[in-house]
Amino acid sequence: MIWVVVIGFFSGIISGMGIGGGTILIPALIFILGIDQHQAQGVNLIYFIPTAIVALITHTKNKNVVWQTAKPLALYGLAGAAAGSILAVSLEPDLLRKIFGGFLFLMGLSEVFKKKNNERTEVHGKR
Image (cartoon, rainbow, N blue to C red; front, side):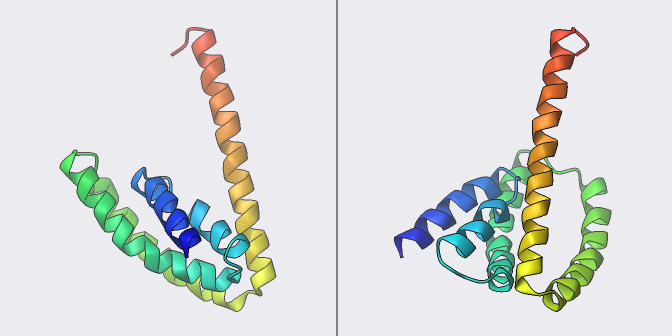
């Protein structure tokens, strides 16, 4: 039970920062609690609702939400979520886990190279 508290707390911190708690929550549910990929993603979706509401309230109070951009993104995101959920439930759990792992890996690489480009720009005084 202590793992549920730890995983939930740290995923909540990441969610509140806008990074996406699922990046911690899903692997933790799979590797620490032994839940399969489909169940972990389902738990993540339920977990996301209250954490997103709290984060949205906080970011709205701090005027960090650009509603003209957010509204169409949310609308198209709903369509994408429907398509993605249909696709996800049709995939084998092992394949879904590999796709999710590959996605996390690519996002990590993206962040590493983005940081290097930002450092290079700062060194050459172009910032």
